[in-house]
Amino acid sequence: MIHHLILRVVAKLLIPYILLFGLYVQFHGDFGPGGGFQAGVIFASAFVLYALIYGVEKARQVIPDAVLRVGIGLGVLIYGGTGVVSLLLGANYLDYSPLAHDAPHGQHIGIFAVELGVGITVASVMATIFFQFAGRSERDEED
Amino acid sequence: MILPHLPALQVVVPLLAAPLCVVLRRTAVAYGLAFLASWAAFAISVLLLLQVLDSPGGVISYELGGWAPPWGIEYRIDPLNAYVMLIVAAIGAVVITYAGPSVAREIAEPQRYLFYTSYLLCLSGLLGVTVTGDAFNVFVFLEISSLSSYILISVGATPKALTAAYRYLIFGTIGATFYLIGVGLLYQMTGTLNMADLAQRVPPLAGNRTILVAFAFIAVGVGMKAALFPLHIWLPNAYAYAPSVVSAFLAATATKVAVYVLIRVYLTIFGAEFSIAGMGIGYVFMPFAIAAMFVGSAVAIFQPDVKRMLAYSSVAQIGYIVLGFGIATALGVTAGILHLFNHALMKGSMFLALGCVFYRTGAVTIESMHGLAGRMPWTTAAFVGGGLGIIGVPLTAGFISKWYLVTAALERGWWWLAALILLSSLLAIVYVWRVVEAAYFRPAPAGAPAGEAPFPMLVATWALVAANVYFGLDTRLSVGVAERAAAALMGGGP
Image 1 (tube, chains in turn purple, red):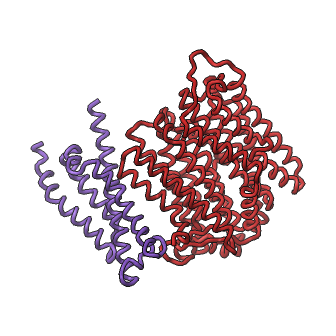
Image 2 (tube, each protein chain N blue to C red):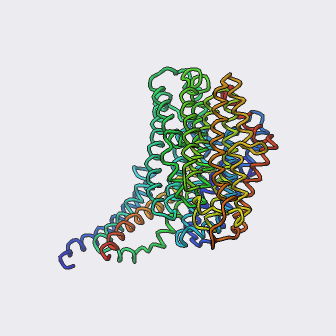
Image 3 (cartoon, rainbow over the protein chains, first blue to last red):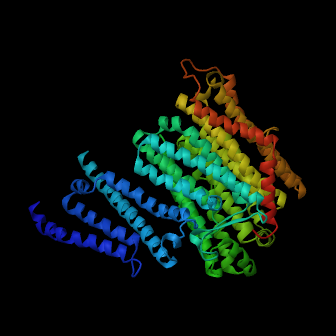
């Protein structure tokens, strides 16, 4: 493993910034380019990089399959749940206007929640897909 | 308070139950959620149908997200989609009631919660296709239902289920893409995706080449999803190798919804005048429909696997449905829509009965059904009940659809078509009789497994058989709504 030293150090340096950039794209999505989908992919790429350098098993310890599975469902629930909240507030499904004291703020909060849901689900799905494929090659080598 | 939001809830309830299944994971919890969501969807569809029939214009419009159509996505429900929605949701509720023991028998424990998740997604996708009034939204929901149905098929017991699912994936994706290309071309010409708005803007452009190309692309794309002969090649294997529950569910709903899209696109968006009088769409579809009736039934006769036989029979029955559309009169379209309903009941009950057979004997070949009448009397009787409907014996729902089809053919003076409908029904007698002969007149092999399937499975199967008989006697609901839907479609506007 010693000859991977540079890779390991650089990866360790990069990963926090990748995660941070993912969060930036997520939360800045309503002012600039970005949004939940892109942010989710960037966020997941940090875990992919970690798995490439340190191995899939270690990456799975960092983010267990159970967490990913909950993330996949949770994101969709946040998205759909936002719509249910607007239903309960008396508006149409996914009408964000009543979520705050006035319509523009309500729309802002609604989009924010929905994009957060998208981000969580996309990140979890991306990581799961990578782990499934990467885990398969490891299993095949054992055979 | 909840009544005005039913159109959204129709999709949202199963759609949100699906991720909950993933998060909660326990098989029992997932099944409970799927059960509740499916029955809730059924209740909503009944309420929606009643609302539509009561409303003065016969149309309910719901603005998703509060954005007014034609800019926002509109859920628009008229008698036609309320009717198709009722079929899908009713079959969904019956199938989920049946599913417990059957899924436990056929699908490995760690996969079961994901199975119910996919089932819920498929249900919400199919309901979404029918509820929406937005041409692009149809594509989105079509993909939701298709992707989840590939998963549902691929978990079948044999490795062949994987290739069957893969083939369906290829065909389904091509079909959906063709549909999308067609919608894209329409959007290019009109700048709108809302169906009601398209219906206003497309007819004046009739004869424009882009519109004609869109017309053709959608015909092929939706034809693939509906498994219209000769685009049906994916269907027999997909239905034969899928788990029993999935075969019953998809056979009774998925192709029906695709045929609904066909009717909706050609009679609402393009309009009856342009599609039928201008483009002669009836004459385009009719030869394929007639070929489906004969080829599907003829191939079904030679299948050793009964499930595969039913799949080919489905190809033939889709032929009858499209034939009604091809006759292209109000009565013909009524017959097509009516057969959509009746075929879902008949084929659903037959596939469910086969699932009971598989549960007990582990096989569904003709040989494995020798002497079945003595071993599983209720299941066999249910299968025969559905089979009588497929043949079109009086007092079953199948008779009513055949009656309307023949009447519609005679109304146009096409006595040869009426003769063809009756002739192809004779083929149905042959393939149903093969099973009857094996089950009632052949001795059971020694040591063959005996005993009825678990109670929930029998109840669900018989519920569909009973409905099959009920709608053969009391046609107020089935024919009444179909007539209203056809009148609205053929009378011009949506």
